[in-house]
Every structure is written in structure tokens, then in C-alpha cells.
Length: 459
Image (tube, rainbow, N blue to C red; front, top):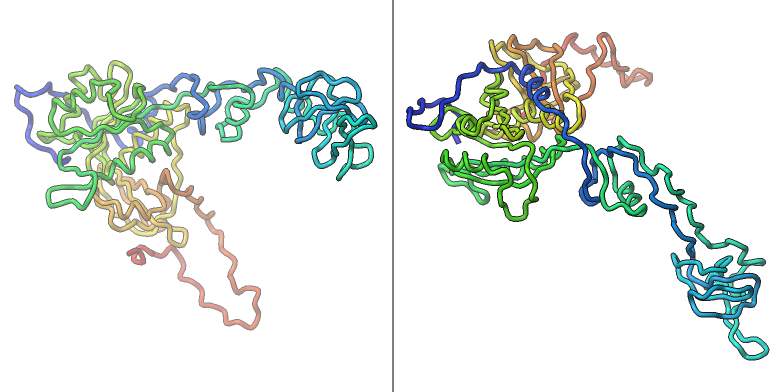
């Protein structure tokens, strides 16, 4: 879908939208973060609680375990042997025993469990069956309480099992299930619906001239989850205004296999430019929404849009080009999802720039980079419609309009799927020479002072 400016609409078209001045990159980040308030906490089923932040303590609803049980397969016994055998579940009198399995309820009167491998079945003088110790039994076995899991030995009723504020892991969920919970109270997390547009986009196969492959379907759900959202259903529409309006108007669209939940955020792809097939702004206006961000003074990703609808949903309009869309998502989407999900404004680090970047007055440039010898070298293949450079990048430099000098520290952020950006070396710090402690070896020539441009090593 084109993102280039086109002709203005005729007066017979959808409602016109007033022009908004583009935000700076930093203004856009803060505007997105400050536009949203955290989603209230609520209960979710255990199978959906993994990774969510617990809002209230998990406490034991009763003693855990709530009954005394056997830790072994064998026999529940009362007193010393030999023991007369009785039916399972019968109250045991002294010198009586009944069969039991691991985890089985200790019958009333049971004092210990004799393991199967420590037991022998025999007969008394009257020929009646009796249970005796034997096999691998040790002297004095079984002692009172031996091989019995006591009620309450893991937790007593009211004990705190997991404190509020922790991200829930699989062991937490198992513990909650053991305690009898079916759902847990967790902090709110934004549900994100993906609205993919473009009649020229295909979902499989090698594209023909005039066609492009869908890059958003395989990519956006994972990135949304990495940024703290919950990726919901994907819906694909064409380029007509009627389709745009209907899709944004439909709070819970009927999509096969999708959860029947309203979205907190709708992310659209394409439709943010000014051509005859770019309808996002007009659809938002007709639905009574307001534009929070209408363009950002950055490259790529300038035509990004953030709007809020009267029902509280946010609409994040990403440009149609894949790299431009990812830069807009990092700039606007990451702060928005963080605010909705009780998080902080994503941090910006600094990295030493490995090349000279000329000024571009009035625009911040977001440049994927590769780390070479501790310095950030701009990646190759980073046009707005390309993904090759981002796929091999270690992070993204935020290059100010006045440019950057070789070796100068420049703001940067890590990729959602990447490693944290290492802190730059302290001024004046020097690495220890590798051959300093090896006498007899030739000493290498000292390196040229000052930073070196390594960007030519990138292919």
C-alpha cells in the first residue's frame, strides 16, 4: 500500500481531518505513554496466566496437603506386626493393616505405612492370612509416622504461597492449582487486535509483479507479545473506505478461532498516508475519535498515527512498509503497551557511533546497527520496505537531526527480540593487552588513537 502523499479528497468523500503538526521522536514516545492509563487488574484462567503479573497474594485455601496420605505403595498399619488384613478404608485397630497406594488416604487408625518391598504375606497358626515384615525391611520398620505425608506439611490454611507483584511462572501455576485455584488475579494487560490491509498483499507463495508478501502476519503477533501485549485475532481487509470504517467500528469481530474479547488496541497496517486508498484518519474522524499523534518527524515511519476512539480503544496506524512499521511500533506502540500494562516508559541507552552520520535537519533517523568492536555501525539494507538489515541488527540508533560524529555517543534502543545494549566503555579505560604477560613475544604496534570507522566491514 502506498504511503506517499496524493491528491486531496473531493468534498463528496469521507469527512476531512484537520492537519496536525508532526511530533518529534521524543514527543511522540511521551505522548503515547501519557495517553494511556493502566488496565485494571482482573481474574484470568490458570492456562492464560503464564507470564502475567500477580495482583494479589496467592494464599492457601486449606491445609496443604489437606489430608494425610501415603508416600509409598504398600500397607497402612496400626501397631506392631504381624498384622491382620482388613478391607481398604476400614478403621484400623491395633495389629491390623490394609493395602494402600502412593497418595492414598491414610485410613482412620493408620499409624505408618509398610512399603511393599518390606512386606511378606503369610499365615498364622490358624491358617489365616497375616502381613509380616520381611524382604528389605530394616529393624524397627515401620516407625510411627513413617512414609506418611502429614496434612499441612507444605502449608497451613492462610499461608502466603506466592506474593503479589511477581511474574507467574509454570511452577507458580502448578502451586496455585494444587491449592485449588481455577483462576488468578493479575494486573491488566492490553489485548491487541491486528487489522491488516492492502489488496496487493498475498499470504503465501512467491509474489508476482504488483504483489507483495505479507510480512506483518508472521511478525506482528510475536512482537506485540514481546512488548507486553496479548496478540489477538488478525483480520485482513481491502482498500475501500467502507471496509476500513466497518472494521474499526466492529468492537468484537467474528473471526474463526479468535477469542471473543474486545481489544484495547487496534493496530492497523498501511492507510496512514494521504493517497486515495489511505482511509485511517477519515474513519477515526467519522467514529468520533481524536488523533493523539498524526505524523512523527522521523525516518522511516513518519506517517505513523495514534488515535483514541470514544469507547476507549486506541488505534495505532503503522505505515505499510515493513521497516517503517517496525520503527513506528517501537516509537509509539512500545510506550503505549507499557502504559496500558502497568509498565514504565522503555529505556533508551547510549552507544558509540561507528561512523559519521551527516545532518538531516528537522528529522530524527532510526538506524538499525551492528555492533563491531564495541561501536554501532549502521546496518546495510535498511530501506523502508526492507527487512534484511533489521534481521541482523543488534539495536537501533536514534540519530538526532544534527547528525553524529565518529565515536560520539548516540541514543539507542534494543530490539524486542534482541539482547540488551551493552554500556559504552568508560572514557579513558583501556583493555589489557592480550600478550602483556607473555615474555619473548613480539609486541604489537600500538593501535591508531581515536575511533575507527568499521562500517565498511558490513556486507
